[in-house]
Image (cartoon, rainbow, N blue to C red; front, side, top):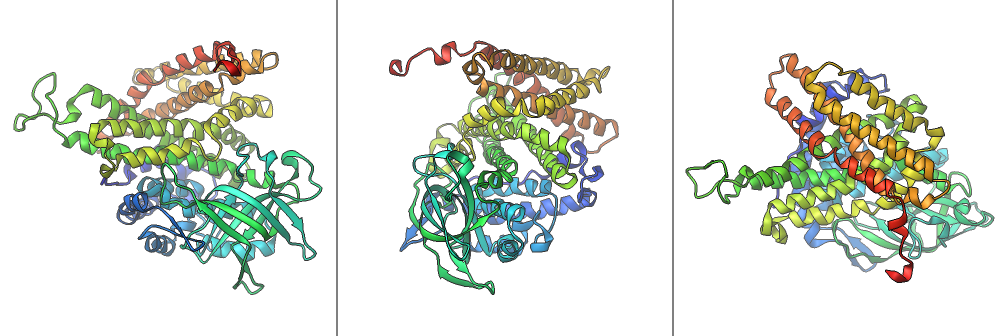
Length: 591
């Protein structure tokens, strides 16, 4: 099966030479010196490669089983989960008041990449808990925080988010789960939720479900939705566990991928729940964690692709097939390794240039979240809100594509389950669907985010790109980056102008191009990251860096992305400007 080794060298480059985190004024960043982050990342990388990665295929082949109303996780998951808890990895950026280590979110993001690359399905148990912790900390009462957060931060108890129902997914205004108020201030929750990740399992003493439901008096649509804490086991006043609540598992879904993650149908039959946040304001509570959650899924998209790329690269160097067209490269063998062939190089460069750009983009997004939360920086908040659908949608689309390319490098052997490449493809596929399908991300971007705050975040992004290009005026080494970025940025602006001119009179014309715009903007964002990384690499070389091969490879990889991928912006613009005639031309009966 494929091995995984955390790319801590590139992570350190992004953190310290691109983002210069220890020099930023964000709370906690001054402590993030290179030696400290190196120690954290190296330790996490060891856990990823030695503890989690060996269980990736186990989880895929065994899956989760529902036995007598309880879900059993794959063999070895329990010991690995205990190791994660003991090492404090479940609580890196959680509040020290509740037992967390209080590190900035960007470090949790970097560590999370390794854990996802090693075993995406396993990481979801703690990942979903992190989201539930954030929601309770933001909206819970002092008593709720004291009751639930210490246990959840430690992952003695885990958490879930219950949104989707059999008849409604994105359109939560249609949900039917009911919350009936009780005399003691609690509610009785009745309804069925589906697609609940980590809905039940045997890794924790208790599972704290956060459930969207409608209480009386809330009105129609999303305005009537409230959020409730519904524990699997009720919690006594002294913090001990009490009776089993009226919540049960109806089914464990048989999925295309992430078999080691228990995706459950959850039935609430008058279960006791407690209001979290304000009555009828459940959507506001849910959206508190949306930027982090969607950035986390974008990270999953490229993190799985990182593991697939490593396997493809190793295979390309080892597998002997044919001879190089420019002459024999392996005279001692019967054939040359795959990596000598230009088309294999193209596939590997596509993956490498995407992965390194995606890592930089995601870590930058994490710093914006840290800045928004730590400094109450409205500009950072507006910018990450604009970037979130791009991080989630573009990176997961391209991450899946990279996994398919990695599988293709293996040829027929990549299609054989025992080789492990199929799992990467199957696992990555869900990232394009959950936490808001990517079509919804595109609609959110074009329909809401571009015009947010009167377009201030969008204009700020264009100014950022312009300033980056201007900063390298006169540097011939940077022209392949700045020239390509200028063209792509202008194409993105032209697309935005098309939406502005057409949205009011023909909204279909704008929304028909939303998916293309999400990808156009994604390329511009990665182009910005590559321009900045190239500048950092040149600075390191100018300063006499000893690791010249790393920085030279960084520049060459960036030039590849700018030359081979940024031109796609022109294609996306042409599609956008074609309007809605082709998209909406057929009646429903003509399909």
